[in-house]
Length: 358
Ligand code: KG4
Ligand code: ZN
Image (cartoon, rainbow, N blue to C red; front, side, top):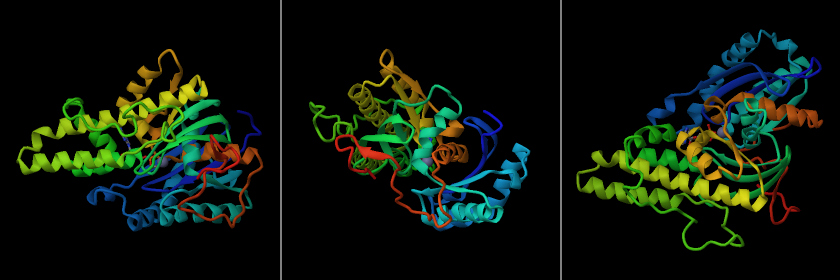
């Protein structure tokens, strides 16, 4: 860190966390506030309109809190950044509009940030060795991506989900089992007293003798697994014997997801001859996933995991990605707008590097 490093204020409002962070240099997080909206628990999922209104209510206080922690007055900020997508459009617009207006009023540059690129930067905020080249497994509520990160900004898509994201599967299965929202931590807690071998759920896209040349060799699919849990749950319900099976169902489902994620990540490491793996996104908070992946990679590659606070949505990772983009001179114009399906910058298909991958 040097005195010439810019002081970045970043805001994240893509889903149900209102967050602001002040970053100085690569890893010095001077202030960081994350406010989770709990109203969504009542509905078993994020309600977009409620999320947008809650961001609007909270944003002033959340930013003020981060500035207070950093002991920094707003005019001292050199660069402003906000998540521009992907995410819920109404929620994104709150953070993006607030930040652009503030940057404009102070005459400072504004950097729009891609939420999933930011998840790539999160681990390095607390682990200086989590830098490219590496294989990244990004597992969140909206995405499941296996990437070869050759350098910051240079991303090859190795695999992605063909239907539900991993976190989405956790959330839907938690709802089926009546465990509440968000699903990941609820399933992990319930699974602690369950037997992961009790229900032999399918391991999608692991079956048979898959070959590296198969188009889905590193891809994921979680929708069929979710349906298998639903069918088994309904069957037990009809028999009136669901309650004693909840822990086993949670543990068996979690084991199937983890098995698929771990196997595909090992394939990606072999394919790219990588010596480092970086985990990111909310599902990477799973201790079960961290342990299983760490064991599978032993002797092949080192595993870098984000701290629990940096695994789920947070503004420090947005600030870090913004610092990288700003360093490359990529300051966005004030006309930059929010996009629910913002393309991942610098991401190309592994087999067709001339083709951008969404
Ligand atoms: O990255 P994130 O905070 O938000 C998005 O960008 O989507 O990820 C949220 C997802 C949710 O689906 C949540 O259920 C999941 O991360 N999650 C977990 C765990 N903690 C959060 N999934 C599995 N195990 C966990 N311990
Ligand atoms: Zn996220």
